[in-house]
Length: 207
Ligand SMILES: [Zn+2]
Image 1 (cartoon, rainbow, N blue to C red):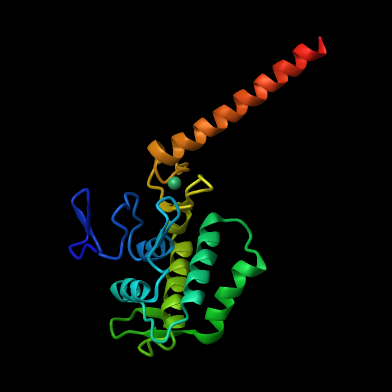
Image 2 (cartoon, rainbow, N blue to C red; image 1 turned 135 degrees about the vertical axis):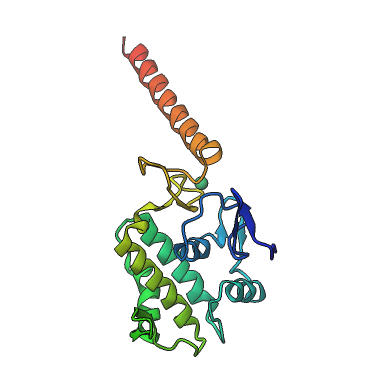
């Protein structure tokens, strides 16, 4: 664990951001991105696999986890990954979010400074659903301010890392061009060559 935080271009990222994160979203969307990236499919690591490790990560990120249901937390993680993927959600992907909504509701609060805030209703009650609701509220704000559109899943189906696309064209498709980008492009190239060879051979046999 890196309590000093990860350093990127001179900016220090919070300790709950994966050390390998090089395309971080702005706060607070970074929290949603880091939550999804607690599962690193490429390196086969999962910060939410074991109870003690999950508890430590959630505490670092400021998400309550009292008597938490770790299965629900992991299911919500995959539901949010599906949200980032932009495909319509399956009933299985929608269900964990509905479970959260059934046990935590947001409410409006007006601060002395005149800000109108939407916060988890049971904030302070430290239920795991409140923490997950907090993530859903961050997503809602990001969808409203447009930053959500830049949070994407890596196009490598074996990776599916959530990355923040800061490119001017907004057409970034890979968490990392050198690894996933080239890996998939080479795979597609080999597939095209194999198809071309097979087609050429079938033509040869046909003549
Ligand atoms: Zn990737």
